[in-house]
Amino acid sequence: MTDSAVEALSGQPSPVLQHAQHGRWQTAQTVEDFAHNLAAVNARMAAACARAGREASSVRLLPVSKTVDVARVRLAVAAGCTFLGENKVQEAQHKWEAMQDLRDLRWSVIGHLQTNKAKFVARFASEFQALDSLRVAEILDRRLQAEGRALDVFVQVNTSNEPSKFGLAPEDVESFIQQLPQFSALRVRGLMTLAIFSDDVPRVRACFVRLRELRERLRQSAPAGVDLTELSMGMSGDFEVAIEEGATVVRVGQAIFGARAVPDSHYWPAGNTP
Ligand SMILES: *Cc1c(COP(=O)(O)O)cnc(C)c1O
Image (cartoon, rainbow, N blue to C red; front, side, top):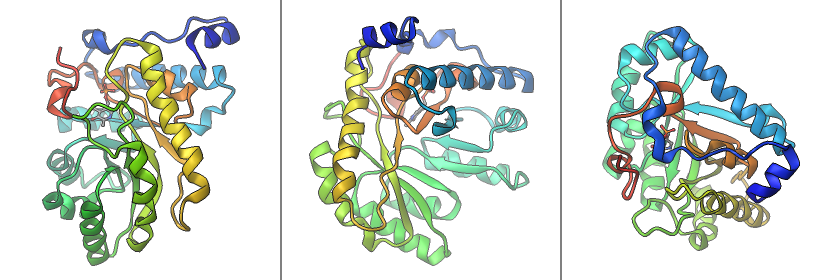
């Protein structure tokens, strides 16, 4: 849907992208701050679902706690977070170890994985959203078998066609997923992407449309055991557009925890540098 179509349908202006405005997210310092931010994000998600004619329950919010220290993560957990996303394995593992007392807390690794870190992911993660190589799949699977564990995985796709971004080119995904059933500890759940960093809503939306259309096309040819139900797309600056285009998981950090001092280019090449 175009922005004007969204406006015409809902009578409301379409969401404004906030990439350029990272400074506007205040740091959450108390359980009440987190409860407030979570409620606000949930309300915006519900409104986006309503605009798109979707059930609010069809989209999961994955709070992203990267750069946030353990003390503040604990406040977010007290406010209701039970599943947290981290971009970097070492940081995720540190927090997992430091919060062993929180038995129900689960971790999703959402950033590029080097093969030498796969063993850590196999040990503590419940989900891995950035699968983009068979080598990583193979090593993860072997480590998971050794741990007697299984892992939900998403295949990361580079929908913005920026050479510096992680993820498979859309045209390589079909043959990639044909190889995945051999890795029986990996439970393939869907596709993940990062949209282009731009304030131009149609260009951002085009990335989300590309992921959804790829999923629709591949669903028919996906091998048994490869489930492409999920679409993980949308962050603090663009999650409403992603929901309008079919996201089932949105990964939201700054709108919950507050603006980050660390630039996005630390996490992926060509990221936002404030
Ligand atoms: C940090 C991060 C997010 C969340 O970004 P925010 O701007 O904090 O909402 C989403 N996805 C990935 C892969 C990330 O590293």
